[in-house]
Length: 461
Image (cartoon, rainbow, N blue to C red):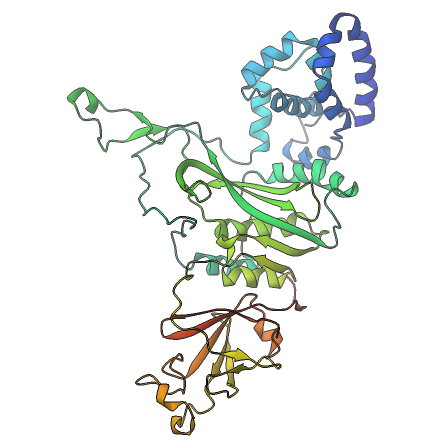
């Protein structure tokens, strides 16, 4: 069970008196550790108690020095010592570090730190795995391109489940997310470091993290004694969750994980409010769906009004997911179709947002495609092309007056922000035409859309 918890005020009073008593013998060391003293003197761990209480049994021997152990983890990171064994030796050799952590007398052993870490990680510790080595497998992407998801259509399936409230939080770092919220994000928000919590803009992106484990594993066979150095025998891997991913910024493969971080973009501090570690091959669009659902559940009192994302998130279903929470997306358009222009774009748009064909006739609205989030327009003379003054330019087997239309006389407008069903025919008139290209016999035009207030029935309903 959770034992006595010394609050932050008591720790500050005790630390001042303890450091004063250590000044005669350890003044240079106290000055050396001045930054970590200031950091822990300000770090209030009192909200942490309510987060970790469910992790302890209500009966049994009471634990000791729990807030001190968390301060020791902060000191360990500050000292760039990631091995608890080495840190315990450093802690026992330095009375100043022991006092900074809050230990009065005996310091904890190595097993105490491992027990705390196992308690915070809601899953079994990753063990060594025996398997065959994984290859990069897929073709190297072009310069500036992102690695495509393994399973096409997976983002749509995940978004459908998210909107139905069927995505279950099973990540083992759930407690760590709550600790970050209570001890860092909420205090920073109260200090005004994040911006207005009722009108918060966030940005999300993934960063590659190289693992220290070898991507080739440790040999367990004796093939090398027979002169076979590239065998396909199973090997031992110390980081089974790591795999190959593509770093689009440096344009190279990496073996490890991807750290997906969501930060506050309303202030110059760019403070993280959500962190998630996934496999290196996981596409950012897939990770965002899970992260967005967990972010909304983790911060129900925050209102996220804008989302700044890169081109890896340029998926219609992500627009749909953000729209359900009344969040305005600012997503870089994916340039995979750039440079494939077939037509010069003769179409224009009138003051009412209705496209004008090459014959200078307003086209007729022909419904909205919910699956592809597109507005469809047809030629006004698609039934009788002989009435069109430009009928000579019609392609063979076409029912429209323009050579750029599909065989059914349908012109499809691809929207930058998929909120067409709320807009009707009212588009932005000022320079709406961004690009024109043909794909699958359809003319596609990208339009910039105005800000639109979309009503939502509630997330997950």
